Length: 206
Length: 206
Image (cartoon, rainbow over all chains, first blue to last red):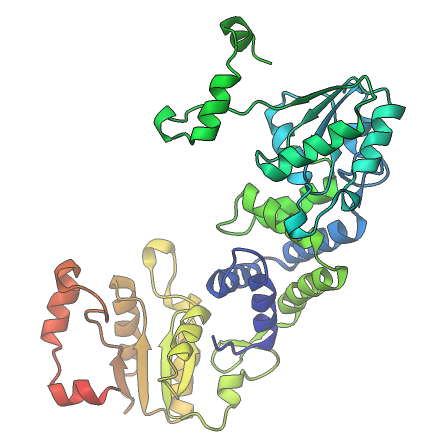
């Protein structure tokens, strides 16, 4: 594309670096901002810079935080003895959206995946082990990706905690609500049969 | 969505204000930037601010410009006696992408549309009339939207230029390349039959 303004061209190129945004969408976004008030555009740019410069990680759970402990760790209403172990921050947001979990989190920062060169040392596993012992955690709920890497990570961590009295669970795998039985993959279907629930516990939910 | 960081939440909300970007995409973009180097994120934010603060409109044609005349008006290689009249800046970029037009542009800033409250006074029509007379323009090519508003605008401007020797043309309407005859609307098909071309002029192109 041929822009008559190098300033516009720069802005379009910057937008086009974002994932899932091509040149045409980038141009649409840049021209949209060009039409907006200067104050609104400044607010947009400043919000992004401020986020990048000031957001930090919670030293306790690895979740995003504005300063020191994150809002979840600081919340006195949450159960301090239950930790949900997740891969990344997006998973925390997804689980929080369900409003069904009232414990704390621990963000591993990934899962063990030798093929991708990710070993236990690169993940926040040592800090998790330390928390389990220091904070007298009663239950560790693993909410990791349902694949070999996720299972390896669960296995590795539970081995490390073999001497601890902590109860280790993992979120249920099964047929999703609204899913059709006939389209479910064999592994999921087989697991959901093996892990079948008595009707009363199903009805009472979590 | 429940974010543990208000800084992240602000950035996501700002992204979500952009057209075609929902909350989930906004979160993906914000987390993407969070993972990038600070320098890259600053460059992104600065490019947008700089564009908004420093881009101006070319005083001659109404196109975007970094300062004073735009690069097209300044280009000595372009034909100074032919003006292509377009609705907005996006149209300039679209036509420039064809590399087929070597004249100058005039951006009207819209088309006459009484229903939307847009009359001739809100558009850069007076400056176009002035240019046609002062710059001794030989041809005015209208590249406006093919609808009643576009036709009204062409009619209005050509009336104003009735005493001028300028040649007034409009870009061809017809069946698009790759288009199927059977799916073309009647008006387009009828116009493309009425405006049929001798084979030799078709082959020689524009």
